[in-house]
View 1 (cartoon, one colour):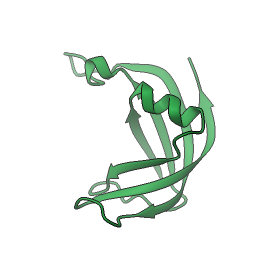
View 2: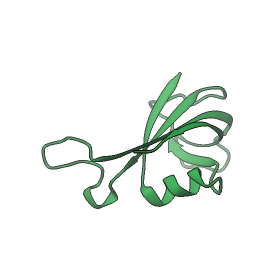
View 3: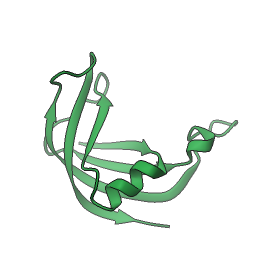
Length: 92
């Protein structure tokens, strides 16, 4: 399964540099599982990733990764932590 996830530039850069290899996300509507693909889509935090007309303000930068581990240990209700491995990146 492919999950498209918005991510702010500061976190995107950390993933891109290999510093950050995990996400903490709400899992109530997603069902994140080991082996799923995630597409991390960098968005503009100054606009809350959405413009006034409802269109998302993306930078064009994307990273593709595969989930390698999922746990809900000590997380808020419906939240999980998952580890991932980068598969590819696409910078504009």
